[in-house]
Image (cartoon, rainbow, N blue to C red; front, side, top):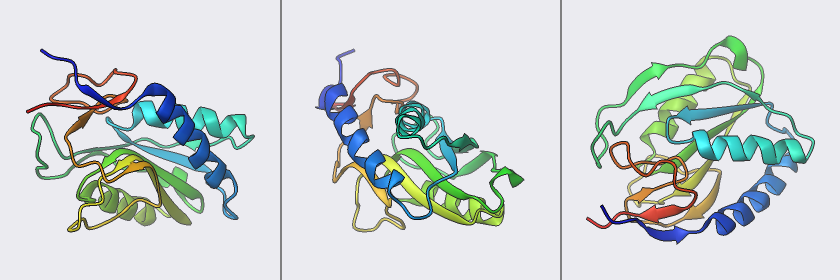
Length: 172
């Protein structure tokens, strides 16, 4: 199995993370709760909440577990494995995901958070592919316009490459 080609190094990710965090801490309605979408967002979310804490913004956490890929490389039916709870009620929520491909996961998670009573929802992703036919875009993204199938930094290919410290592309 060949290693994925590096698209964004660990250092590039860290630099962009600092830039995005500076934008998030400057918001008038600062996020109060981080809501990572499991499983692909857990690495990015951990880095994000720690970087926010370094700026004296301490986020509570509410995990959401949605599954759209399974073990395939194309989206399938979206399953809700763990929905947000009343913990988000009346709070400004920062929805965190690894990759925004067509936007169905972000759109569904946003809807679930609002139904659970969130005061507002801002979205941040590691990668927003910005497909022309996407149903949503992220409010904030570390990187945009990537068209390849990506892995690393929490994102996987049928369970592999999730722990890579960089974002890479898999050659088909």
